[in-house]
Image (cartoon, rainbow, N blue to C red):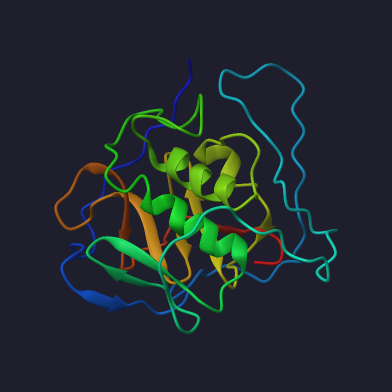
Length: 216
């Protein structure tokens, strides 16, 4: 089967799990000319080894529709910024239910190891690669029906940074910023791919394309 490998990097600082951090909300820049924001619906005409799916959240969805309740529960903090305590992300109370569900779901896999291609045959796996981890978060937010590799996340949702969720993708690696925390499989401080983890530190977005779910 075809799998996607996450590129290793040596930039950034290490994640410290033994203290509380407040992360700035979407602290990154993305230097590209302004474009018309529009949802891209991806069609596939031939079989692919890795299953693909369109975003479950459409730009045509009515923003006034009541947001679905999630069966997931977890810790929260007041305000609009997630914080990290001992490796566990606390969802901001002001965040939409979808965002909270994504954060709490990722908490459940934060000890999983890095597996090349992990999370692509199924959302629930013994380990995850970069796009598998991001797909897992989007799925639990009700925003994705099947896992996507990095190359397809380049076309997911809408162009640019989102208010609550931003996906940064390039061929070979994907990470996400959710309510100010970075979801990444690469430990920039110590090097190497360690699996899905939360980080308060940012990383360079040079060469990445920013996408976000419509409405978030």
